[in-house]
Image (cartoon, rainbow, N blue to C red):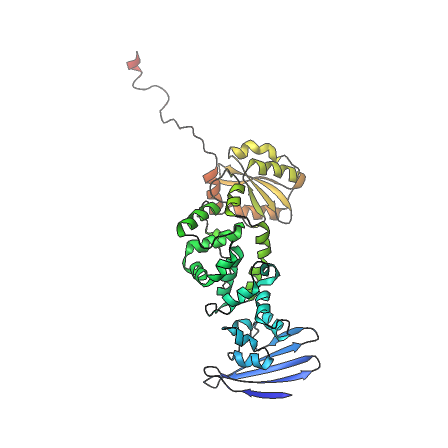
Length: 387
């Protein structure tokens, strides 16, 4: 072993010792620390400068450094700028970040902020501002809090004002359910958001983005609460898709479809409800069949139509089955009236058989307004009085 150093412990931190072995382009580090009860925690990592790769070698498979003495660990690797610049340096000892830092691809806090934001989001949010307002703030002591800040910066229409009040807005996201809903709906619908709206304005905008709030699946948060950096990367990766379709709330209102239905039909990815006459005509053209001739049935709410895109594309007609007292598939055809596999029919049946789907069809289906006659036909006691 080329080097063996005993790192004196800092108050409240366990004593850390370490050594390393260097062979060609590979350097293997071994760390061990003792807590107050003299329990030992071992950890090792391997840096391969030839292949620009870092491997974490631990008894328990992990993506982050399990040592508590962050200062001693960073000082040993020569990256102690992490502990000097960041109030919570332990957050940045995950494999994805540590590899960039240990191999000197990231050498300062501004570069680290740019790496976390990604190239696309860095064009909107200044990496220096993000470093000063988020990464150096004691409040952001977990990745989950940092993800909230990133989500707010993605959807905001005023980056400077939002990042200046990022702690307040992050707390508001946690305690104000309506604000939480609005942020997630804005991200889902691709709408720029004024993060400083009053509560009454928040309710109005929610009603625009989600006319009926009975389906809770729309409230799902885009932040994975797992305390890991990896899902932060997944969140940032969604920014490009959001930015390419984002509009103001006024533009969103003008582009809203005039659906003939009430409520929302919960459908999985790959299934879409045809809600307007234009959509039905377009479906007939792209699928090369005669579904457009069913326009009277769509407008009369006697049939519901779905466009399916799984392993193949298909159009589905759903009607009410009086005998079964439920809504079922009447016909399903692919491009140019091609037959579809049975597995696709089974998947569609499973989706439309749920309570929410059946209730949507029932609520929006045609109902006869003809009143049922309760007067018995035939002779009555009043016949003699008419004579």
